[in-house]
Image: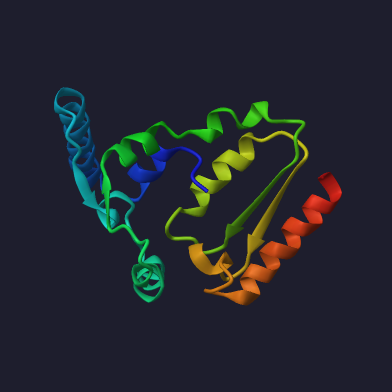
Length: 160
């Protein structure tokens, strides 16, 4: 999961790429406010895509008629404002289960763990070993999906 959208987008870019992207998004926001026109960009320019994700897109997502290859840059600006980490400490005493993939390259593990740190109890952190971002999906990796499913069902049986 993304704990802080702006931090995540910045962390996966080199400094000069982040500055260029930030200017592009801010200009698109200005244009949208002043003219109502949207500015689109390829999904891979907004959400930088690692090799595992590229394979999943190529082998599965792009073959689906619902796949959208371009998004309004407003999506990036909205992602910057997405900061669940800011309110994570206020959720307690509600139980939270967080599942992450050990080798997630799309959303670096450190980004995901920041939100977990902010949570109060009860909470549980589950690592899917040797997995990348999409390995928790049954159609990608049934074994990893089973780990996630089992953990979720156990958590639900305990707290619901």
